[in-house]
Amino acid sequence: MADRGDLPRALARWTAAGVIDRETAARIEAFERTCAGTPALRWPIVLALALGGLMLASGILLFVSARWDLISPGTRLALVLGLVSGVHVAAGVIGSRFPGLSSTLHGVGTIALGAGIFLAGRIFNLDEHWPAGVMLWALGAAAGWLVLRQLPQLALVAVLAPAWLASEWIAATRHTGAWNSAGVLECGIFTLALAYFTARARQPGNGRAAVLVWVGGLALVPASIYLAAMSADRLGGSQLPPPPAWLVAFGWTIALGAPLLVSFLMRGSDAWLNVAAAAWTAATSRVYASAGEAALYVWWAVGAIGLIAWGVRERRRERINMGAAMFAVTVVAFYFSEVMDRLGRSASLVGLGMLFLAGGWALERVRRRLVLEARSDG
Image (cartoon, rainbow, N blue to C red):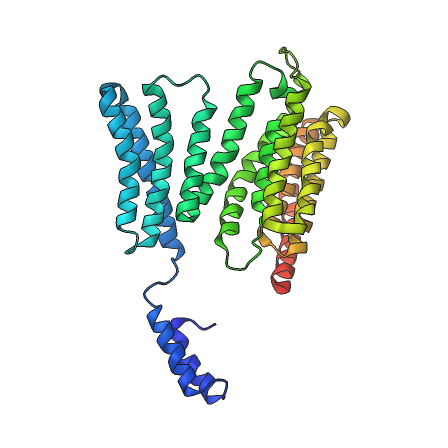
């Protein structure tokens, strides 16, 4: 499709070639002229709106927290209600004039809702079960998504819903040894991040999948570090009593079942790949205990190669790039942990330099070839 600036020349070329007649060309030009006032947002505008929304929300939270002890209880409640409602009202007023800014302000209002919930809990001393506050925040974001159907609300739901489940697990296992022995939390976070990252819309042009891919991509790196660190640290044991078997079983059901449900809703029958990834994740928590640290590095290399193959199969460049990055980090970590300590200082530095130069060159060649194949196939 031609850009709007090149549309007159394209229409003239199509008319001269007999592809369309003059009346059709006139109707196309008239239609594009009516849509000229509502172009898609360019990435600098999207970036400015996102950063502006984050800074506005952070400023609101900082202002309230810095002056909280100086405000009377009645003023506190009025301030909380005013922050939540005022931002949403402002978003509704400018909705028809600048939809992008309106969507950003609605997102700020939902973030302010979380601050309001926890501040109201402090006012009325409702801190006995703190995960309930996260649950109310997630429900507020879900209500915003159902009413507004705006992508920032979906992103907040994608973050807050698992945050509530994680907080419930932390609260339920704080007096048991499940934190170090079960592996539920880190496996659930990683599997859900991977489910988001591999989301695929069933209909083209659906922005929901793109939002989930961004959320999953940003969360996958810290989730991978957390999973690897907890898998290697689990042999330390715990002095706390073991958790009940039913609690561990229920935790594993939610940790693996919820991400697979998301994958099924977004990918349909292709979610079987997410089932395989979930099995790999669950086994990661036991590899170190059964086969040692070297086997854990091999296991992560296998997972990285699997993610690359997944990206090649479905022609997704971001998965190829993420898998290549995971493979490179795994190789470097293995060198520092298993090889560098056994060599002298000079030999280890020479080997590290060769690893970066030769390994980086070879990995980049393979990555570029796979990306080009995925792009040409798409």
